[in-house]
Length: 365
Length: 267
Image (cartoon, rainbow over all chains, first blue to last red):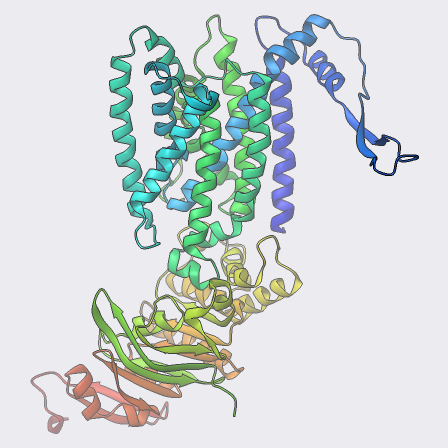
């Protein structure tokens, strides 16, 4: 079958799974809501553009330009309990959508990093992004300095993530070339160093320790529509860039010299893949803290099912990552006391990963 | 007369401060199969890497179809030069067809997908390399000879005027080696130019139109096989004593190396 058909087929299927996961998840919580009611709430919230309206008159005033404006309309108006509407729209949906976007971003970045490093143990944090984000966030929580430009915790995490990734890249680059092995080792070293910084800050965090530990474990609990909007706007754009390089990523799997011979500008492609993956991971980690295993195991699971071709694998893994994090976060918040989602992903992910390791020959990508 | 497909002009290459190639010149035209022979470390692989633009020369230049390869983009190079590597990472479970289709990469734009011509070239390459029956098999499940044919098919699908082969028969048994070179010979006869580094002097003599004997980074002798493979040149290049006879079966020179204890008179 044609690659594009396979990519579209898998994407539609996994998007449907994601839709079901979101609907089911929105019904689960202290107040249980029937999935049908959830669907009605979601449909009510839907508004579609029905046409373009020209506001402002162009007659009699030549300078005034007519401004086109989309006319919106909500096509559905089911009667639903307003309490349900508030719970789903205000409380649960922002968090669920954030989980979806973060899972999507981490799985996509993880897929790219595993292909890029030709290493099955690679994950989105391999070039120091997560450690950098953690160091930035912990420093923000512990060190009593005002951060300029009104940057909050998430801004500090985002900047820390990008600084760490750029540092690793700069250290590993010499004469315009960035050997993958050097990059990998520089990433490990920077992660170890930042681990020391984080541990030191934790020791001196005093009353803030609880907050620090909570952040480090990964969480989606404080999600608001602002976080969702920001990530929903950035993540698809970055993902689009990665998708445009999916074929080059396939060819890079053959080794850099072979890839050059097959028409890939190796160093430029590596820079783009690294930079986009780093920003994608940073955007996810900044809003959610360090959530492990999504970017590591989801790409492996999906690769076993759809094969190694990144044109199919990348969208499939990203969508599967979105569903995975929506479902694990549902588990995380469903109990009597909420557990950080990072604990759930690792607790469920690690045994599954070990199972894969034993049952399949995962010696190669 | 138009420019040859490949022209290597007084090429010198340094690697890590030492000169690996020194003042090497050769040409190959459509229909030519040029063999690079010489001892280990003579610079055969380095010459192939320089020809495909992976290494920058310190002096001289390489042109393919009139284009200086050191100034070309990877994409343009990939449209002109295809390489069959000695070994490659084919350990990922791509299917044979997917692996061969990667040869079309230089011809497809960033946002494009394979069109009918791409698919046709892949089908032809699979057919030429007798891989059509394997198209759906994962490359990880193939034997060494079959994997070599996948690499050949990938290079054929790339549809370039110049084909480079780095020891294409090094890891193959005699039957697969012959089949591989037959295959190369047939695509060259259709009009491509090819340069192949070949260890086995007898295979090189049998299949190549011309040989270039490299030793210590320089061309020691170049020309038709019978003029390149002589007792004197082999002594100079390999520091080995050898007898060159004529093999009537293949109608080509036959090199027999002698051990220290033998002399040519004993045979």
